[in-house]
Length: 254
Image 1 (spheres, rainbow, N blue to C red):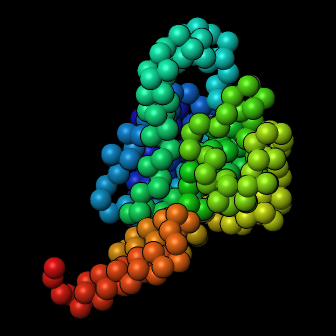
Image 2: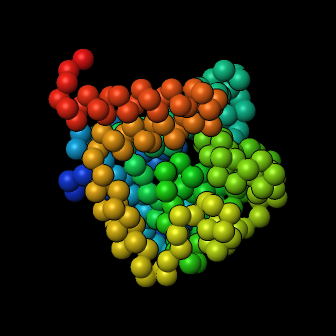
C-alpha cells in the first residue's frame, strides 16, 4: 500500500507489517498518518493474524510533527482551539481510531521499537499487544512538555503495565526511559541488539502463529477484559469461552 501518508502496509499471509516511513524527520507523526493507520484496519485481509509495527531509520517515532504546534493550518493546535469542544473531541476521536484498532481480539500486534519512541510514538508502541525493543530504544510520554496530555489511547495501557504511581511519574515528568528500564518494569517483552530487532519481531510473530486462531482470539478477549471484571465475572467469562471452544472443536453447531 502507498506510503504517501508516511506509513505503509504490507501483507504476507497471516502477518501484516505496518511501517512508519518518514525517516528524514524521525517518523514524526501527522493526522494523515493516523488516518492511514485507521484505514489499514479496514484493509487487512481476513487471514491476517499478527501485525508488526516497525519504522524505517534510526528512530521508531519522535512523536508529534511539531509543524502542528507552530502553524495555524488544518489540525494545528491553533485550529483545534478554535473548534467547539464537541468538534475538537470528535477530531481527536478520529485520531485515536488509528491506534485503538490494535485492541481487536482477532489480531495480535507487536511493536518493534528502535531509537526514540516519544509521545505519539510511545503511545503507538503501547497500542500494540507486545513490544520488542532494541537496546538503543528511548521511551518518553512527552506530551506534558507541550502543555498537553496523552490522548491517543496510551494512558490506560501504561497504567495496566506499570501501575498508577509509576504511570503518573512517567507521564508528568516526561522523562526518557531506557530499553533496560522498560523491560524491568514490564513495558517491554524483550530487549535485543539493534541489528536483531526485525528478526526478533518476526520470530515472535511466528511463535504467536503456532496456536489455533480461535483459541488465541478467546484468550486475548479474556485477558483484555479481566481488569474490569470481578473474579466471579472473570470465572464466568472463562467458562463461557471454554464451552465455545469445546463445541467448536467437536464441530457442534449453535
